[in-house]
Length: 350
Image (cartoon, rainbow, N blue to C red; front, side, top):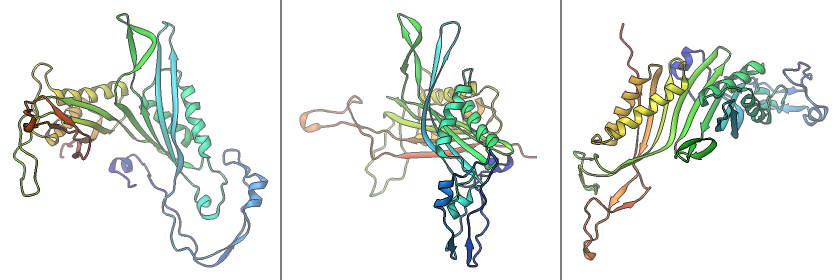
């Protein structure tokens, strides 16, 4: 992983460089047992397991290390006095950068925050969120906890994915405590917190399936002996959107910022409900969606989007008298085209 310009500006440090190991032959012995509560205490059985040994010259240098916990699933319910209840289901990954070189170099676990502790911290922070919160706010609080609580942890990167539970409509009214899975899209968020504070905040969406049955074409491309695709100004356009946008500063209202970004993507892809909007290529539509998101969300610094083609191939079987009339398609998911781009906000020149 490499530092981005924004992370360097905020004081982020994605990697911990490690001092080069001595190349002279020496004998390493068990370090003294730490007594600081925050650092942790080694058990006698663990100390006995580490024996004095000869350290030989090393072929390589430890240049990067991290540890944490992935796929921690948690559901949080808020029950309001009005009787309405709310739920969020999240999947969390928390990765820590810490001064734990000795664990890799010497098998010494003194001061390490176990991944079991990382897992339990996710549930602890969820309990602390007394008010409804967004995935971005949850990620920030988890990352902040690790850096503030454990002296050896210099940076925490927390990724949160949120499932699309939506309130159920029953008898024409929103149900107080009934929910249904509202779609395919997964809301995403990432927070990076270090000793200098919040270094990075981003949000996004993945697996967002969208399709329109007209107002799409593809012409004018290079055609050679390897090309079998025919030009057309009438086709189905389907894709599964993965988008991630980075904030230059955290929005005051992360829910509003997320909604504005999503509205941008949807409105540019589909266009006017009655007439639609023509797409000459996935590339052009991707760029227009990104531009609109930057216009509507002033805190957004950049947006990266990946739009794979979900192909619907015309079915034409003249032997049986079946002629394609923009009506019957062969639905297929692979192989598929992959279109990706990053659009970054243009800064005024001094």
